[in-house]
Image (cartoon, rainbow, N blue to C red; front, side):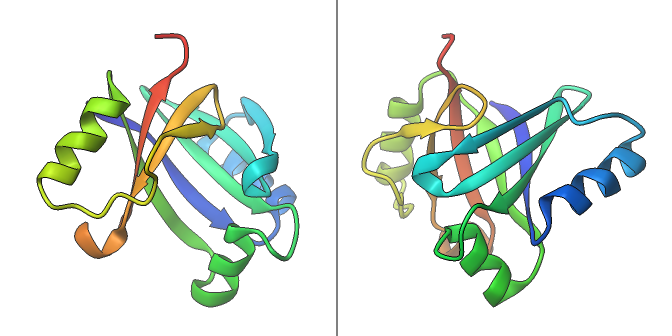
Length: 133
């Protein structure tokens, strides 16, 4: 298991991309819209991990609601796992609150599932598994 990416919720994706291009001294590697989540993502490779900017595609997006409530900033930390189904069951057995009964398709060609922040010191944790496995 390793950190795959950190997700940062932003109000203005275009402005945030420019900011992170300057901070990281590189260009955005990939952009993708995840229709089911009403979010547009922008990825930056940073060594073995990535930074994922998350912008809402509509006012009813989870990200729009998050930004309205908490402001811009860290949204989640994602850990790459070899077997997301096994890890979800392991975490359930450990007493964690898993937000997804089954993994779903996410950005960057990954299966994803989330663990509630109340069980993780206030941080939303994403488990992800490459669909290439």
